[in-house]
Length: 354
Length: 221
Image (cartoon, rainbow over all chains, first blue to last red; front, side, top):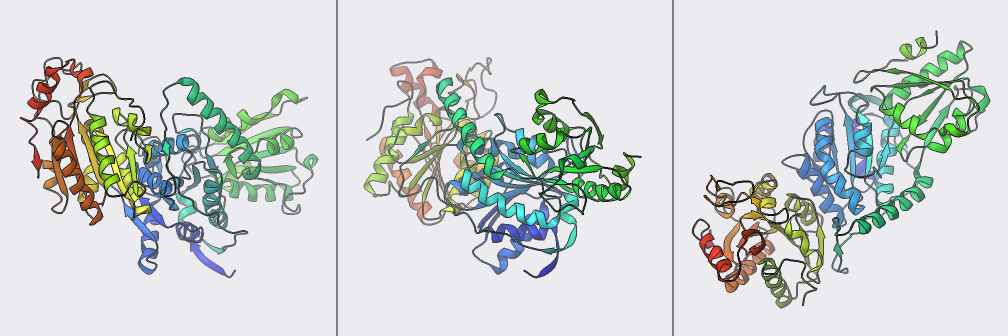
């Protein structure tokens, strides 16, 4: 496909259209607003694209839930306090296994915080509901990846029926990049949960504790089976090493970061390696399900881990939960650069290794 | 025509639901109908009728059915809710569904209390009515939904009746469905028995319901 010069917002809208989405429900909130306005702009040319600016994020979320039950590929986009309000509908979608798709532009928190950037909605995206956090959460690092993962979000949501979040931020959404919008494979179709052909009575509230327990254990089984197909990560050991075939031994110190911070970390790895330092980057692309096996395989052979994130440790907590320390001969030291709600530049990461 | 009732003995809600189902049967519209249920006693209707039903969240059934109807415009979309779900926690979405004239039918069972949680004050609790959370009696005039929505939507079909006026329940629901078919918003509020939380039985239950007809006017608005 030809190269285009597009913002993250434009790429998200294009990805939703290319994924076959037909309905957007949304409420304006920075930095997600331009996804709503961009979709509505496109809907003026293409009458098959439906939209509604709802009265709040709660209604946007429940309209998405209703529309997907009717068999429409619907989605919403939100941020910060809106992501908090969205948990009501997302929790229902957790319980009823709805293919709920939301693009989240993280902004600084708590409260109304700041309006463009943070990596503080990791916990909210994964575990914001009153349950066990069985959601699919993608964290794109570049504008091109924002396109691919937004398209993928619809496919995995409709194939596996777990609520799916594209967790990004205002920096990436507002960035304009020279991009090639490539996506391998087609779109998963949208089937209604109830239709004229069905007669279903669907619950999300249970009379007996045991009934809910059984339902949750079934969900967990499905989630673990799905994880094998969906989990995604990248191990980067400098531009001399081609993508997946890496030498684990070649990395003494490992940076772990996600999203746009990982793009800075990637540049830092290049610089550090050119200085002769043996540093690599592990980047979870799915924050949930977390690439646990991939992480452990790499971590086993490193001396030190550096977590780098625009949060006080939401990624660190995920990493620590997923490292299987029991079979380590020597547990690596975990240090980090935690800058809640501010951006992190390549130089800052390079300077960690001085 | 229905499965076993999960409602309390004496509850008025099965009357509303069975009347709705009878209309759908007569119109051969059972397959087109989708009944979304709010949380509260409305959730007990989840397998009461042999049509598509699903539970939603407290106060969220209206927004969910707005989304459902937009996803499938040829459906008959019903939002079934109690007075708390409709007029307290869900009022914002109810008002906006009416304001936008979304072509759905909202059915409100008004029993003047929060039934599922044990009889606390509702937006429809009447002046002087004693509940666990208004031990000195309700202080406000109760919320009157159809009257409120009249002022923001001229095309909507808005009516109130009671479960002991079953002919009107049937007539109003029929008109509400017709309104939805024509592409407009409709809401029917039905005053309903709650002997469990009113803590009354027998004739006193009917007297309580009839007394509700003083602050809550019967008819179309």
